Amino acid sequence: MSANEKDAKDAKAAGAGRRNEQIGVVVSAKMQKSVVVAVVRLVQHAVYHKTIRRTSTFMAHDEKGAQKGDTVRIVEARPLSKRKRWRVEEILTRGAAAIEDTAETTAPGASR
Image (cartoon, rainbow, N blue to C red; front, side, top):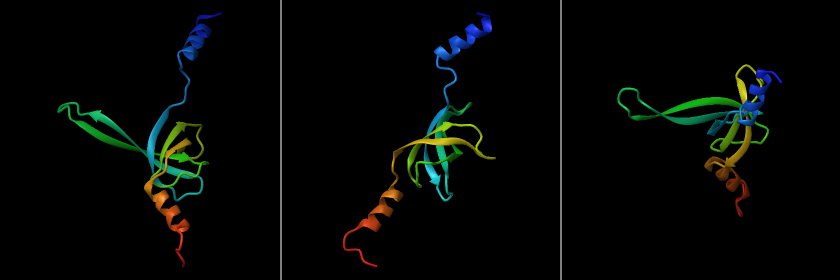
């Protein structure tokens, strides 16, 4: 076994090669199988040491049917299009907008 093979085996055992995961909120779900997910992270200012919120948006492939306001887990994927490199792994919580939409359509006594 060469040194490179041994290093590769050690890296896999240490968890290297796992796909990067992010948790964020769906901010746009107007496309057919794509969503835009906003991920918030906290960074400290270099000079003033104040904690600042930074938001990154990612286009993600969505087979799960996520809607605006849902909290989702996204994982890295192969390039699916020009801007899509993530896919929705699971929907963690449904957003308020999704709950209101279903309440309007299933409300008893609501006639149109």
